[in-house]
Length: 69
Image (cartoon, rainbow, N blue to C red; front, side, top):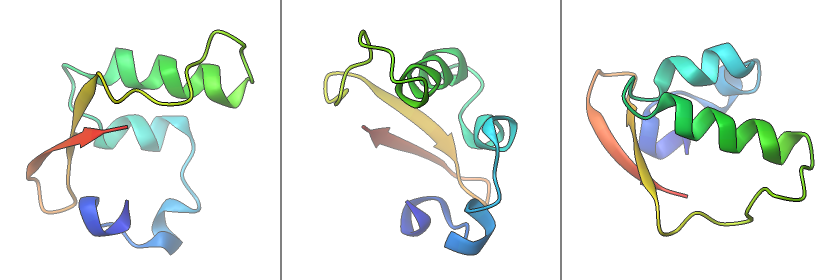
């Protein structure tokens, strides 16, 4: 993920959900954050992989990049 978004592992290790939300493209944030919340809560409805759904992030350099999770 560090290679994809340009943030160091050290930077990301201190992130909370708000920080994570800051790198997700505004049009995709609700979808991606809800999925992350469910996984962290060990919600049984959370899917292990979302290969059928991609979302965009904004890299540290300000570039839009697609992520398939």
